[in-house]
Amino acid sequence: MMIRDGLGNPRDPAAAELPFPGYDALSPAELQQRVLTVDEDGVYTLLMYERRHGNRAPMIDVLQRRLASLRTWPASPSLSQRRRQRRRLMRRRERH
Image (cartoon, rainbow, N blue to C red; front, side, top):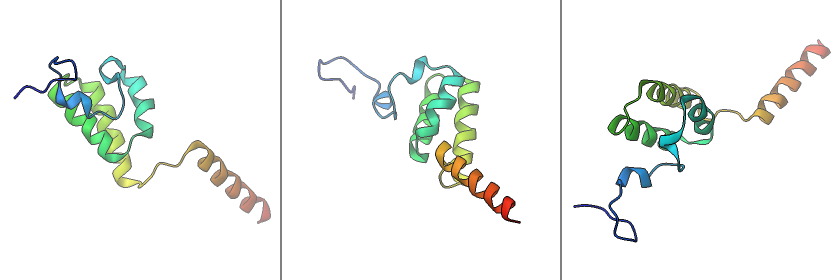
């Protein structure tokens, strides 16, 4: 069965499920930045989409690395969280 948009045009069902629009036009460097805000399910969706459609090795590599980092570290700390952690460590070192 062909899935159609509101105007009756055929569409790729996987593209509608992507976490953000414009994925196909991204470079690997742009993807690396955009994927930092995507959860594990979203990264997995992007990986499956890439494998079915473009199957571009650099994109798959970026997605696999991000997926691995999400699985080994529950949540990547934000820049502000990393700065706070660094300040705490510096204060501890100054005390000792």
